[in-house]
Length: 393
Image (tube, rainbow, N blue to C red; front, side, top):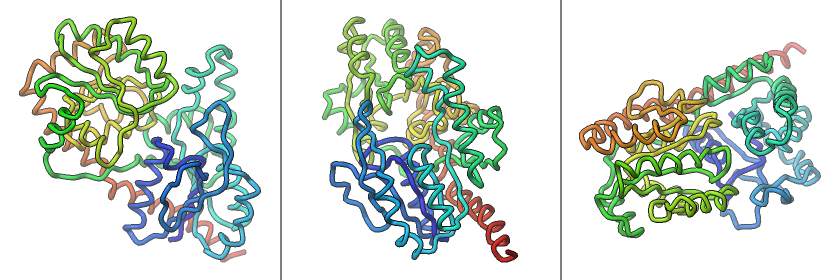
């Protein structure tokens, strides 16, 4: 198949959506399919390989990390895209990419699949609290329902997200296909653990919790800081590492200082995904995650694949990962209860080692190969009726 993907975001902008696109693209190409991307151009040199088409873009004033592709520049690419004779167009994000993607699909006579990555209703609750709840709901539900009705098939990363869309009244066929992860069966490298701890001056036996992801309000990191205050009563030397960056960092740093947690929290900024982040997984004892808006929770799967046990709040996509209890523990969104679960694990080395073994086994169920195959099959299910209609018209 020849597949065209379009997205409002991609590397070097680090995000779960960008990671998902790259994972599926690489997997599809390994199966012999051709996948091209239409994505924004960023200020930095992205070092792209073939098949990634950068469209001139403009910054979004409130969100300096984000870009919107310029419609005129994108539409100028129509003759070139038509010559490539794609089989399906896959829209990855609901902003400029959705509307230009639909326009291109009509012009190129292509079936359209769309991914619904983000639980926008919950996000609006974090960023626009002053807007009345019913209005926020309408702001998320009405465009979501309209956009989902405008495509031939939908991909969501979790059962919870599928349930949300059905509750909105969406009738379009939905397929649950989480982003897969690359499974490496070698054991966690003690070398990587030692290197990371040495580089960051962390004692070998110090208990370490890791959060990885955007430092943003919807990630509920304030709960982790409150939990840490409780956990220190049983683990006085515990250290929380926050890998990532984002708009909530200044407020969280103030909370850290106000609660005398400076010696127990470190903001690491973004870590290189290929080298530094795997070492951080190896160096930590537990991944802790409190977000209640994740449609999948890729970082949970990455941690599990590295043999790092997870303690998280079982809401939305995280619930699918946590439900078995294998390599994981579910924690309520309560600082004291969350802290007690972490304390019990950290105090029991045998339990921690067993959870690490289980974590790898659970991660195997989300292998990239399995998920990519399901996506290719779904494309074919969407393409076949369209081809039949063309043949009979």
